[in-house]
Length: 282
Ligand code: SF4
Ligand code: SF4
Ligand code: SF4
Image 1 (cartoon, helix red, strand yellow):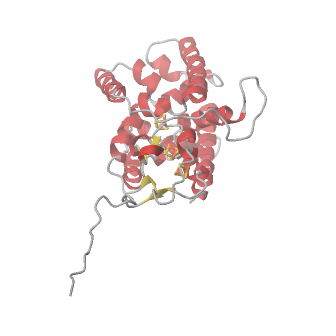
Image 2 (image 1 turned 60 degrees about the vertical axis):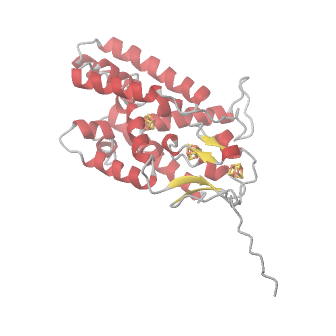
Image 3 (image 1 turned 90 degrees about the horizontal axis):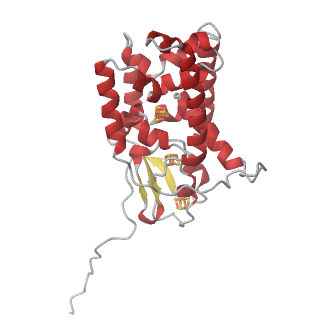
């Protein structure tokens, strides 16, 4: 089970490398470069083929938000900022890996549904600026505009906005991703990103869940403190699966294999009612 984190990091690194190659060099940079963009949900949903969208939706119904764990370049950039958070102290010195300031459980924000609604309304009305600022593939292209302005800033030019504005948006977006990852983990993924909110709705019905086994949990709080989505509440044995981005950090950190990605929900260890069998006197 702990190998899941390694597998996901390898996949995320491959997708991010291919996406960077595609945006900064071009589709012929490597054989994997076109795959990176074909695998993205929004470009696929807006294109002639829905293949990637349907594939990721199916995987989400099976395993939860694996797209957010592997293929989304913004998710991986946020993970890079999270890695910095865990490694570097405010004064710049390195500290023991994994000793970053702890995350704590936070309630889900209603704002994610309002942002999704605003995103859909803007798409329908043809207002391109809002999707350009919050939809993950465009966010990634904004950041890439810093290294390859002519190609990555093209969508801004299509909107009739100058490439300089695109570059400015790229700089602000890059700074936003770094600060967001450093201070709030995957908050962008659990509140702002419209793709994340749609996948969260699908995850509600997924077969596999992240679950805490109450029989094995020793209340060390490692999982809650390391969860970048702030969706684990150890005292209640609660994992808000809709916000889980399947980063597998909690599973890798748990010292007792008490938190797992599993098919069935674990029932409480302590029965609420105990039936007493009394023997009748002879
Ligand atoms: S929530 Fe959005 S930005 Fe975050 S990883 Fe998922 S698709 Fe990417
Ligand atoms: S519950 Fe949190 S730490 Fe665990 S896989 Fe999900 S997002 Fe990652
Ligand atoms: S890391 Fe494991 S043992 Fe520790 S609180 Fe979480 S589930 Fe329980």
